[in-house]
Image 1 (cartoon, rainbow, N blue to C red):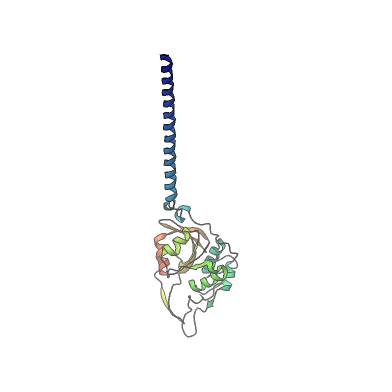
Image 2 (spheres, rainbow, N blue to C red):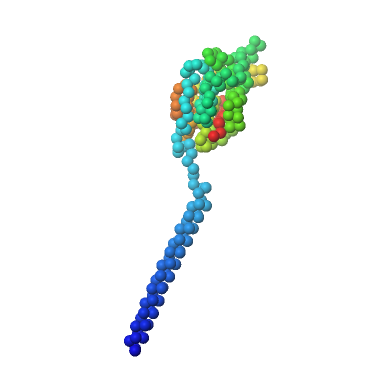
Amino acid sequence: MKNKYVIILVSLAAIALVLAILTYQNRSDDLRAESETATRKTEIENKDDVPQLSAVEEGPLDVPLLNQMDAPRLYNGCEVTSLAMILLYAGYDVTKNDLADQIANVPLNYDNGLHGDPNEGFVGDMPNGPGLGVYHGPVMDVAKQVAGDKAVDMTGKSVEEAIYQPLDNGNPVWIITTASLAPVSDMQTWDTPNGEVDVTYSVHSVAVTGYTEDTVFINNPYGQKDQEVDRENFEKAWEQLGSQAIYIES
């Protein structure tokens, strides 16, 4: 009889031990699940803090290259050629010559001695020369004819706002710069029917496709795709020509 009680006690103790082990394991699993849930919650809450890929990491945008010298040639047509590139990238079916036909035109020189104003239209003869160029206003008018409210004029903004932020958002940028893509010493002040305007015969226009810490990538309408340019010189030349920039919102 005594042995029977001992067996019962041992059995109860064994059952209690098994229950204790199972309880411990379940509690451990619960704690592990709570920990994983907390970790996932933290990751979700902090996902906005994770830096997104920018144009620096992704490389230049694959913007179609157009050459202003391709037939029908536009000898002085860098502005409309660069505009055509960013419009094509945005999905609009345009040609450089179509845009050239739409842009306003003013004489290079007037009989009274005044010069044409690039803020009013292309100055001179775009296809064959002589000519100077055109600034952002008339170019923006053409961009709006094609893209409507998707055309955004960032002229006068900082280089970060006007160029690098649109690139980070996947939008190439039309700009006015110099042919050397660096500051020039031949700036002039012209008297025009609308007042004084700073110009240079070194004026040029390109489509900006990307950037790094030290380099800017451009599609040059002289026929170079993703040409690498020193970033410091690029920014100085852009600012020297009035910080003119347009992009087409995607």
